[in-house]
Structures are given as C-alpha cells and as structure tokens.
Image (cartoon, rainbow, N blue to C red):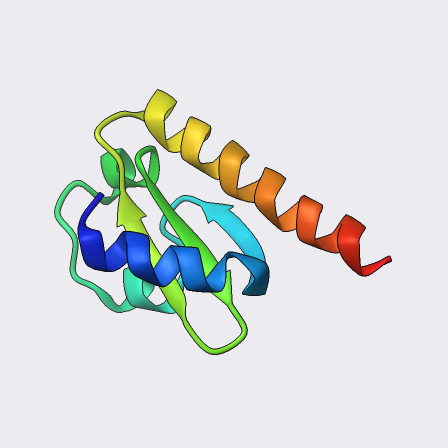
Length: 82
C-alpha cells in the first residue's frame, strides 16, 4: 500500500460508511475494464461520505482479508458511537 493511501486511511477510518467487494462503485462501473469478470473477484471499494477508495488486490483471498479488516474497523466505530 502506498504512503499516500496509508495517510488517507489513517485520517479517515472513522468515516468509513461501508466496504464493498467487487466492481460496484461508480468509478469501477464507469471504467472500461478488460477481464471485468476476473477483476470482480479482486476489486473492492472503501466508501466514505464524500468519496470512495477503489482498490485491486492481487488475489481474491487477499481482497477478502482487506474487506473483512475494513468492515471490522467500521463496526468498531459504530460500537463507539452507541
């Protein structure tokens, strides 16, 4: 993960609204992709109130681990707000 992505995530993890596996974000939908079916298995989006961070992992397993971790962070935020 690049330094700029790390910096953005460290400042914004509290603002995660949802984490979506696949190529469902507006950015992915509007992008002309080769092998869309294959990309669907490795892409995911971290959705904030004002933007999304659209990422591609190297494998489906890695994508699933990232999605699980960011979902965990989002749920931790929700618990703190209650």
